[in-house]
Length: 493
Ligand SMILES: [Zn+2]
Image (cartoon, rainbow, N blue to C red):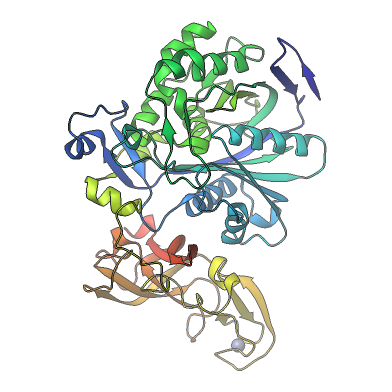
């Protein structure tokens, strides 16, 4: 149900108690650029306030971060990708203008039947994606929607926005059970007030060099107005990244003191992460065990929106992991490493045949095996054939069923290479063969070859427990190749 109230441009929606969130996940890349490092490269230019920003490495982007966050949300909800009817991806910085990033995310998650939808054009899109998902569930059109916000907005080298924009993804499982949060109402404000923008074909975001525009003309007043008709006294107001530094002002302007203080702290560590920010900040806010929250969304040139949720009595928030402690010890990088990770500094014309290394042995065989590693399970001997074959590698049987490859395994052997061809991979590179879980342990089947993540290249040992992680594996004709690397599982590190 929609009704217009509270002025000609404030729209509010209410959902009763028929839809909400049952799982939340987030992903923040490990690299951090500190404002102090940035100022060494650009002395005298003022920074944008945060201490550090999170930086996706050269093998990460909006799609890979979204897959990681979505995996977390599915695990939090206790469901698998097969339980999801639709996947919505909200991003303003995906790898393509024409080609679906949501479809790539769906494929990376191993989705077979889910419909994928791209929301974009604004950092407010995640609020619109959530609203659409809540509507679809509340009206019984679908049972479950996976909603993901993922961004790393591109800033011009030397622009202070490099000290503001960070990379991250946040994901939520929307369904009628609403085990974490019940959606109650939403407010929305239309405004074309623009503080930063990126033109078609442009690589970087442009901006007006006047902070008053955000404070007085767009971010603050729009958020306050979008939440005005739904905010109740006990609500914790969770802010998007653009608004985090205005936390005290928003508390004052809205007459609402319970603005999540964590928003400012989080933005100071990971940066303004666009469409990811409100969901990551919501995950952080839930660890404060509130009884109700209002989540704000804002996009330059698109106005603002807000959704009010209440915490069901049965929900136990006491054991929820806070985000801040987990993201506070990122790896600090210098400015040259930042430029290389973000692709702003690259050897000329390496757009040739993809990465120097394949990230999975299936990368040249079939796209499905690359994006969602699938194996063929032999009914006769239990061997897990990877890549899938029509004749079992262990017993020559031919009764094989295609299955999603288990993502965890144990390293059988590896080598570390200290000389590499040109970027994006940097030495040392560890190439590992792992026996994946499932299937029989004594045969040829079930072995996967892939690179170890760069940061773990020198820590890998025979017997290390690893998991497959969706990453970029080079670019060909402008098209990103995706594949898998191994990461060490926490239990073995
Ligand atoms: Zn067999």
